[in-house]
Length: 307
Image (tube, rainbow, N blue to C red; front, top):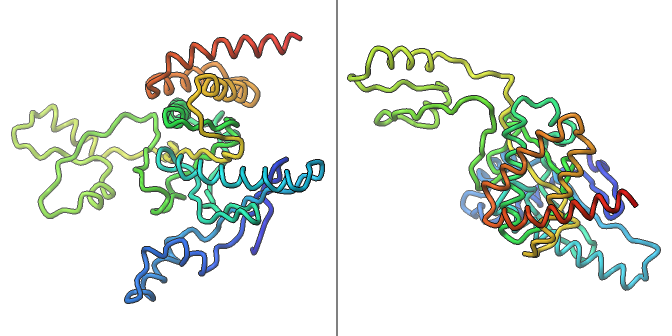
């Protein structure tokens, strides 16, 4: 597969294509040295993403040519900057290359499913909805407005699909299972390897009571449920986003996700949105002010619907 059209919108087209060796080298040039170039290249081609997404802003015939050129150039630059800024806070596709002349952005391809197609059937929907609210709050506190918050602009990537170089941030495993107890490391052992071999490790204290030892034994033999979907939530498509600290814009952003949940997930809308708000309230420093403004935004929305 050389190129494949995966989405076409009013503003842009999304094309999935295979990453060339030259692109892999360019995107990871800091990790490569002349001395170890061959070994690094082999390692790079194994670990680096094999596919990328090209977002190309299309011309609008109804606009004056000079104005169209300027608008597409500014929006391309703005989206790339927002993605780079947001990528330091939450999980978003990594920007690989920006070509303002061609109005194109090369970015990481996220191999997952749209949350709009998945959320209704997820057992850990509470954790996912909480993460949605948390991510929105983190963006807002950093002065980033997404501008098009829907579950269609979110991707759920399973852990089995996750690559090692997805993000510098730690992966949060979302699950409705109870938290695992902290393990006691053994001298000389490799913590990550030991943890991978045993989901639950015993405490090694000789003074532990028989009752606690019995619990330890049960936990150490417990199997991790394969029905739980461990993964990572990505926000995508910042094409309508902008940097702004206004309370009004933040409230509108939350109103958009509320409308989107009601439209796409109407059977579970109320409980989904309730948990989204919970995640927002517990994360944002300005939640009270934003949610108070949301009430006014909702009233305006109902007024428009009535007339």
